Length: 155
Ligand SMILES: [Cu+2]
Picture 1: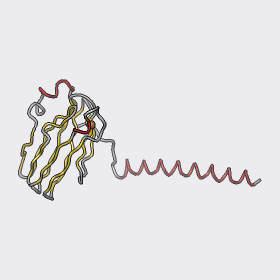
Picture 2 (picture 1 turned 90 degrees about the horizontal axis):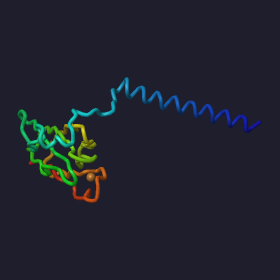
Picture 3 (picture 1 turned 135 degrees about the vertical axis):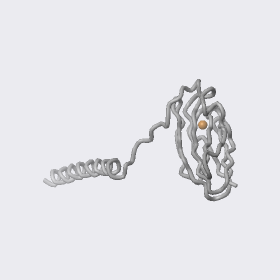
Picture 4 (picture 1 turned 60 degrees about the horizontal axis):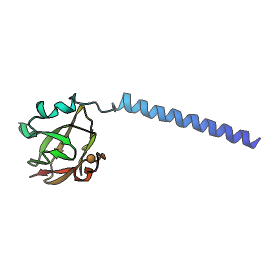
């Protein structure tokens, strides 16, 4: 008799948890507009080095206080691996890989992205505080993975 009772309680509990999980997903998608990130564009890995803007990686000012940092990721480096911008800048990183999956993580910021071969990764970040921000690949990409890092210098 007792066993039947507990079985019923746990069945109901299971259904309630399942429904609350589904409700949470529904609210975040329909209410808060949470989406799976989409690639900013497509690019074949073997064409990255010859296709604009990745044929000329670097930092450019696109308008007052707004910068674009075009970065090529390859085993095992970022090119360029040093980004210099003045404090108060908004930087849009455009990153593409010429080979395998890499990560793109900048410490003490919201930047945490994947660089998937065939896709262009785009992420924008404000840099208000001067300093040096470590940029690392945080997706294991082979034997030299630990060497794949750079920095953003905010002056
Ligand atoms: Cu890596």
